[in-house]
Structure formats: C-alpha cells, structure tokens
Length: 147
Image 1 (cartoon, rainbow, N blue to C red):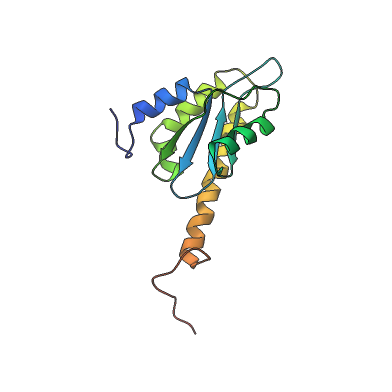
Image 2: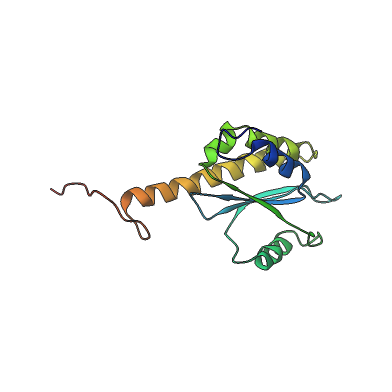
C-alpha cells in the first residue's frame, strides 16, 4: 500500500482501472475532474473539469447533458485527492489515468488530458491567489504596510 500522498495510491489506481465514470474531488478548489471512459463507434472518452454538483442526481443529469449518446451509468465512482493537483502528477496517478484513456485509441485524448490537467491547475492557482489577497471568502492574517 503506497500512502505517500495521504491516500492509498494502489486503491486509487484500482478505482481508475475499474470505473467507467469517475469524479475526482480536490481539496483546494471546488471544481471536479469528470472522467468518462465509455466509448462508442462515434465518441471517444471524455475528461473534463466541471463544477461541483449539489447532489448525486445533479451529477448524473449533468453527465447526461455532456454525453447524450450514452446511457446514464449505473454508478459514478469518486475519490477525494487531499493534496494539490500537482501531486496527482508527481504520484504517478495522473499518468495512470491518462494512459488508461489514451489506450482506448481515440485521437486527441492525450491533448484532452493535458488540457484538463492545465485547467485544474489554473483553478487551484486562482483559489491560492484569492487566499493570499484576502478576497471574498478568505481573511488575511497580515496586511501589507500601506504607503
């Protein structure tokens, strides 16, 4: 059991390998990574950064809107990533996820994975900057001297 990142990495890999549809929740941002490994003759897998859903039912409905040609899945697996998304890459989990999707054989999947990673990284950065600046929802402990 590899738990260097505060999570059982072997179990995360098993979830990634088993899930048709997967949601990754992050600690820093309320945005989610939605992964749909289902394919058809006309459509490849999907990986996309999406807003937090208010309920499981909302997540199923939003998936149906994003993937109307697919039936609603029986279940959506999810896990919480307790660290920065960069550690998802550093732990090898991101590569494991991307390799699974790329192995499905659709052109553009690697680029879609890269774009999703960059987007979640940028989302986390926005939250971090807001925290440093004491933006709405955050309170600074020290203010910069004026003048």
